[in-house]
Image (tube, rainbow, N blue to C red; front, side):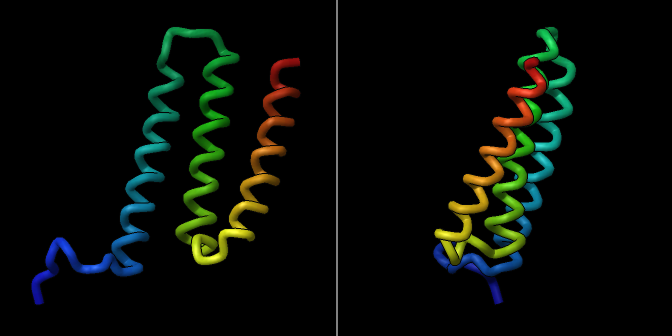
Length: 91
């Protein structure tokens, strides 16, 4: 049966899009290392992209998008941890 543009996306479609997003974020991380800038902005950018990837994994693969409170809690913990890592990286 053909899938129409107004059809609701299935779980497999959402996981495929999440996978494509993770590939794009990984490619962006790799390209960021080729930029002719200092190591501190590159390190911060890679850490930020890793945080985005973790959020995609939590929301889509662990299906926490159905539970916004849990997703917010995990995002807060991960963001705090990433900020701590970045602060230690700058020292």
